[in-house]
Length: 291
Image (cartoon, rainbow, N blue to C red; front, side):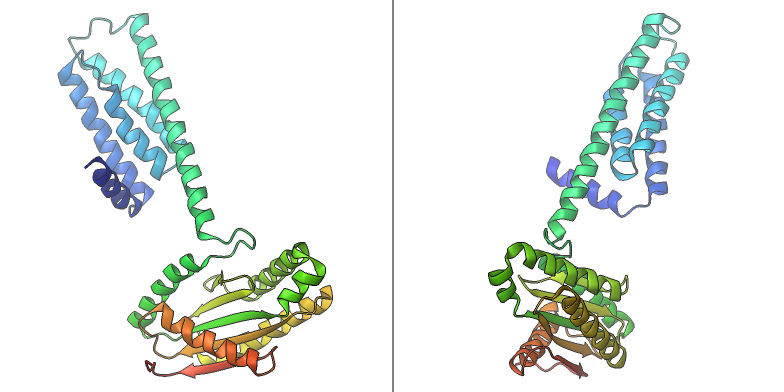
């Protein structure tokens, strides 16, 4: 039950803007202040962790620290308004308020730190550790989103499957360190050519896939010819005997699944590879046929 509630809170607040989250937490903070007034001597400090933790997690460290200060201010105002408070103006009372502030601040910093580590781990899980590109799983998630967008707005979609010819020979003859440098050079070259909206992922040891949203056949072919030329030039400059077999499919109407767009591009890539390597095969598909 606790886990279900936690997941519900995360899903709900993740979709909210920082402004909305701050507004919700401010209202809750004022509600806690009102409870503090009517309950008198009962300490509610642990409940102030709720708005502080939510702001620290979903908005940021500075906002979380600000809410720690606001929480203590609300607590002081509530104490001043409560007739049952005996030590309202005593040193001991303000010492307790300072301790509560430090407690909330420490918890706020911990939540912010946990969120940063969580985001880092989440980002690492999405990426190929060697090249920094998206991994297969992340590509499928983004490609599914682009397929849905293509259906919604009737937009073309292009996917290119790139295989490195003779890459195994580089690893065997020049070593895996050189192979890693070669892969990094390939990724760097591709990134210099693609748009910010395009999606690049590493699918295997020497295989990469590029998704080009809202890209018709003619534009895709021009781009891929230029990319192929730039990749070849990069290999020549470094003296690496590697070429590129590229299969690309442009879908006038996107198919239903990511597997289908990958299957078509992969088939064209293998045709390019078996046709003599270092080739680009592009096909515009107006209607997907199964089987």
